[in-house]
Image (cartoon, rainbow, N blue to C red):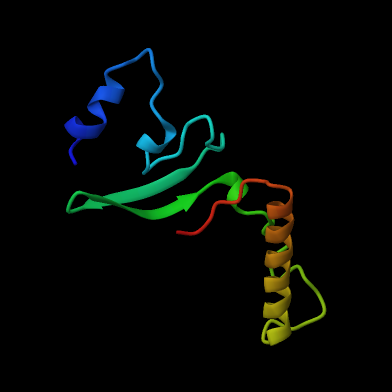
Amino acid sequence: MSLGDQESGILEKPDKPAPKDVWTPTVDPLDAPDVPTKFSATFKEGRRHVLARSAPESNPYTEEQASMDTLEGFSPEDTCGFIAIQAIHLEKYGAAKIQHEPVVPHQ
């Protein structure tokens, strides 16, 4: 199917809004979160490849909360420290998901 077969008739009628499912690779602007996002991409063989993505709301915990330098009760060589850091990550991520705050998913 080409653009002429399916979408040209829809796009040529400005008095009628296009159906939401016409734009499958993107999100409807009214449904998209209003969050500034930085990303870097490259194009290979006509396809887009996102290399990196970041947004202020994508990191639900502060650097201080997730640093082994600021937490006490373990040595940096101790695996309990790594487990404590991962527990903080999961706790903050879960709290953000429950509150429906925007958390950028991994691809």
